[in-house]
Length: 75
Image (cartoon, rainbow, N blue to C red; front, side):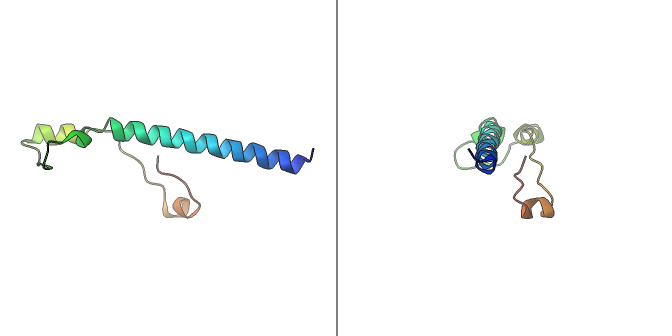
């Protein structure tokens, strides 16, 4: 078996696992986001405490422009 083929195969498996890990983390953030459960009609928060609750979810850190150009994911 060629070592180059084995290296490419292992890297592709690692890429798939990394993508699945990213998707899993992203879905957790989206599902637990309090703002996702807003009332029907998209009403604004009634008071400042409700505003703070809605924005209390985990914030995603955007990669730098150079990182985005290399395909780095948000996280």
